[in-house]
Length: 280
Image (tube, rainbow, N blue to C red):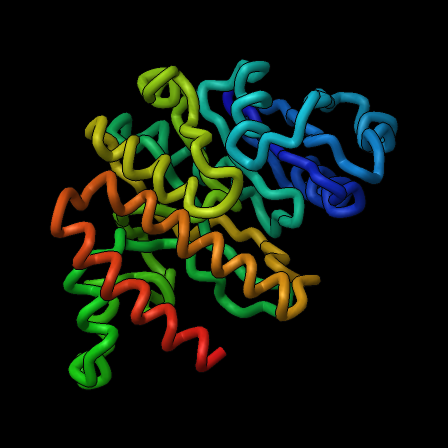
């Protein structure tokens, strides 16, 4: 088996149906399996997925342990050489899975890869990123940041300063679409993806752990996927989302900033977030 596609479902039955249909429509040139993990959806077990696509595996979790635990449950049943973590609210626009598979087959030094993501309205969804640093946070707080040429901003941060139009080695990519070499997951602590976060920032943590093993994290623009992220979140839900991201970012940053350096980073980061909250 070349690729195991893992989709974690939580009340996204209709999204899952469309996502799976797009996988079957566009994916050729490799062998693959689709594993859907239901995280105790209040809507009930999505039996219609299995009825519509009898070839998929439907794994029913006993608890909603979050994004990471759901993916680990799916991975435990996977047979693929590569694991593709794919959000249910995504649609493939081309043979994106094969394009990532092809690139990772060429270079055994790649541990993680992703492709071009866009929002439902066609706008670019930045997925190629650097880890946050003290220098980065200070720069964004200062007026000097506005004076930097775009190319320099791209070099420092990637993200929305990077046009995502060429191959790029980066620090981390979005877990909405993340292809991981299965043998790399086996080398991680406990032989699985870290599940210390229920949701958010776990993708950055996984990439950091994989880079610590000596593998590269790569972005390849050829594959095209639409990700309908946060399409139904109101202002209050977005506020809670950003709060969770900030909390998890501080926990994650402790892994590469120790002692006084972490306190400096945390102080600057939180100050910047307070300003952003006022502007939102």
